[in-house]
Length: 331
Image (cartoon, rainbow, N blue to C red):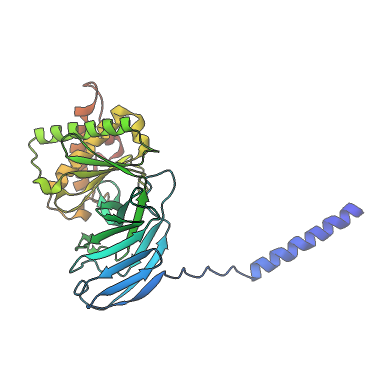
């Protein structure tokens, strides 16, 4: 009887709890308030939060603009720990003059940070997604300071999103390749000096092979091209070339690629040919998206054919062709 009584009490409690849950839906969490917000006019001014400030010179904005700064958890993932970021909402897609950003990272002159900007961009296989790129900055006692511009960049029939992100990465190293065509950004806790040297050799080998086909890149203004050793979050790719006007895009390699030298060389060769296609291709960036199969097929087929130059033997099959629809051009 005692056990039965306890069971009856327990069932009654569960029943009441279940009824209460169904009648009282959980209220949604309130939106996160901005760190700073305000209207910036054509006369310029400052938008300031505790650890970030943005200065607009007179004429940078064409009209009065509502701006706000938020914290953001989606930063570039170079190091072993996730980095924090800031999101600036309302920033126009075109600025008439560069703006100055000051971002506190808590270091000093002997412990500098590198500044990265995050915007929507197109990659050959990944389509439109958030991509991070390095921004040259100066260091001042715990602050990264940079002058930023922003120009029109059309994606599909839409202009780039007004959402713009900034992050300061600590502890990164940068290493130029032997001929100065590429510069590798990496975190020493995830990438060794030996791996960096091997990456550099593969990129210069790919550059020699591409130019040997007759591709002639632009002058010194596009060199060195950035190579980021960090996680690729928008696709399952282990290597990626991100498009930018006039072939000034950047490369990203997943750290897992670094454990296989042959695979690393093949994927680097594939993406370097994409960078050559980007330099000569007059199509809109959106035309290289995965959904545009007929055009993507030709770009990927030639980049996959180019992989054969980096296999250790002559009978290997291009790795990337297994992922694409051979019938796409005939549909």
